[in-house]
Amino acid sequence: MKKKDVHSYTYAYEYIRDQILSGKIDPETKLTETSLAEKLGISRTPIRSAIAKLEQEGLIKNKRIFIPSSIDMRNIFQVRILLEGYAAKYCANFITENALLRLRECVDIGHNGTTEEIMNANYQFHQIIVEEANNPLITDIIERMQSIIYLARKTVVQQKRPFLIEEHELICNAIESHNGELAEQLMIEHLQKDLEFSLNHISN
Picture 1 (cartoon, rainbow, N blue to C red):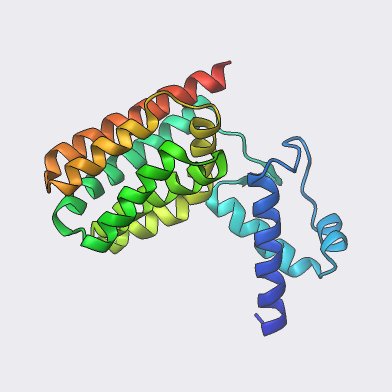
Picture 2: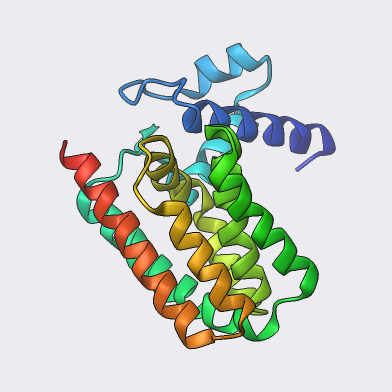
């Protein structure tokens, strides 16, 4: 891919992804290469590549925005529970002082921040734990799932799931105490509650 095409691909990918995650594209809208190319003023090739990437990430299916069903949501959380539970356990062993401070800051923002700040802090909280587990494979898998995870995260934060931040604080405390078994248990319970809340939101 030429340098110009790489720039156009990145621009197209970030634009389409942001439009989807911000809810600015109607789920019923079919994403066509021609209309997007005209809108962004670039050729169809980078648009095609961007759509393919977003399909891999799970945000687009059959050229339309992917709306996860209850089965899809269960599948997503099954993977998260396995990987993030493990990550929390080993994060308690490996976490650095700097990362622990950042984790605590995420909890504090969760208590006092705006919805947008809490969204970002929620992402950072889980990301720090995954990265501090010192397992690049887990980090890579979770990173490739981030777009679809965002949809669930958006639901639990914007709909104000009860005790969300309190659970983060308990997980943080367990990690700070280097209690890996407890951190794993709390993370699993936390994600199970996220799943239940998300499923209830879908059904309503």
